[in-house]
Image (cartoon, rainbow, N blue to C red; front, side):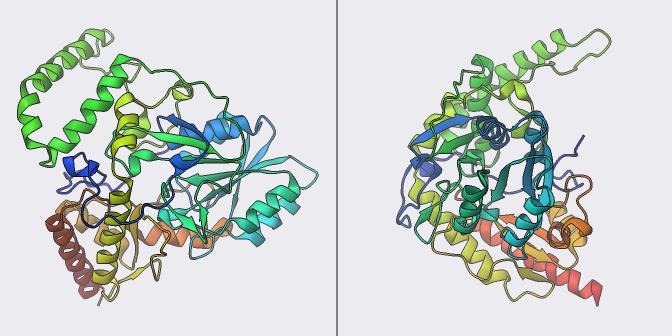
Length: 417
């Protein structure tokens, strides 16, 4: 059982770690420019509840099954692995380069190593942190070997590399819409190369209600939509009392207050790594699908880029850290701002105590993935602190976060000295 994400300190984040709803989310705004290509531009699209569910569907569509092998980057989220096991296949990890691009030479070595044994049926490749990779060489390799390519765009809902849109190189591509839109759940499976015959159905009225209410409550908790919060205050309070009563009534004897055995939303909405196949044929909620359609894509891209560049400018010369990417490519819409920190644990603990949200991506790798498998992946996981740069951050929130991060980094350098 893999552990949950993030740090050990249970302190409320003072600013939102993910996009939250506001009226501005549906307007382009004065700083919105050209919207980059989106995963939703693909000819074939299925909106599901999470990116990991989309991975399972993509592998199933490629015919991955018992006895097959799937190549996965050694630098990864552990949520990528259970869908492979659900299909009955095994995982082989390949190295990544210091800039997080796939190590094509190591992929070729893995193909040669397993030639004549188990079939390598698919390769997963990830656009880490929203920076689109050049997948043409890997696409050519897969075509030559008859191997399926799953393009992991969980960090990269928008973007292009040399005019090639993200999501268009893989046989199938997957996305995590809840990383980029103000919604509680959501992912997508897309393809420009194959028809999608996956049929989805609603997860029920309870799921639909939870998806909408959770998105609204997250917005309210960070001071957004105050008028709507006042209007819904009594209904939301009544809903909470009713829900608590329902949980108590359904709890097994001797376990008062136990949660229901069937969750109203997938665990992926609560930062879990687990994979629940009960959600494999469920479509994303009506609320999430409507938000994807109505939210300003141009605003998402413009503000994420602006916030990323502000973080880059403020932190690039601070001692005790190094910005992972030297520049933000024109075709990139970042998920987060990745920073390599010397005294990672101390800085992360201080930031968590201060209420700064962060992602320690790769800090927990799948059991067995160590420096002998990929030293770069281990180093990235140990040193990485990724900060939010999403479109819902207010200028005051961004300024506070920058000042707090700078202070924590400077303090860590003094202690180390």
